[in-house]
Length: 392
Image 1 (cartoon, rainbow, N blue to C red):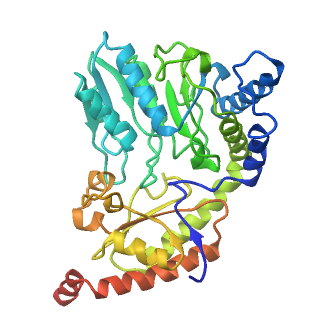
Image 2: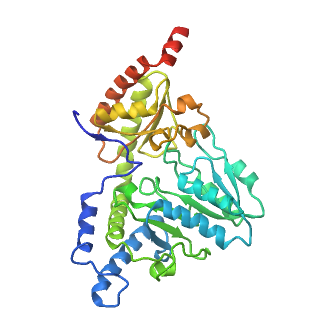
Image 3: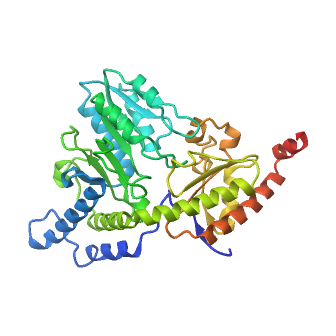
């Protein structure tokens, strides 16, 4: 292995040194349970309050609207199941999209087994939800719209503000899974008309196992975890003080560096996209060309399998992610790529590269130089490619 290049930041990110440094005291000297009544516990309680304030400010929210969770999947589950339960007397219809994260899709499938109806909106070839279809699907018994802020696979950013405005006009609660978008692009819950928003710390250089659910004041929603009185009686369990502190520090850094980081990542991203599309034939970019996350590159390569591509990239010290679900033991390609209209054989040959603030032009060149060779080798072994070349 000549070198190591990590380009799977949509899966998880490296904890920043400053984040780890902020966390360590709460594992060692300041280890007290923040729910205890003695003065020692107040140190942890204040640290949680400070982190809550940082997160609230990052979204234009109030600190009383921020609830710390164990991650993005918990936030999605709490938001959707909680609203379904609290508003069941009003209706049992939910609207979401076909390209949501499985934390949303599987939660909706669970509710369908318990008497709820779910409408799954189509998306166009760029992965964008149709506002017209959304309006048409709204019913008197619709209680929740849940549309992700930006897609985790293809990076497409949804028209969240317009979706939120439609929901508000019809007095429907609006939830967005912002796990990929938070810390990458500016979000304001009031301007975007968002009622609930879930995020995860480890997607923005914070620790794993901690996240947040924003719940607008006045929204009726029950506890997701029952037990103690933590998180204002809404999320029981002793608080993960080091994790919350690290999350808060990561958020502060993300907000302070966002503008410069966004420009840098877009520059590297677009350089990579342009090189791949220009130098590797028979491939296509997935997701919207401009309306996409700054760090996301998702490209399908015809006549090859994504799993083989990943294995050979790994041998070159490169970490990426396949557009197909083969690595999770499924033979089915990505539900996102199928939803944007890709045929199975092309969807199977997709690669997602997600960069970070540390990714350099030299890193991108190393990846693409290896990618060109690997694609050429795999196509040379493909009977489909051989037939295609003969026919053309």
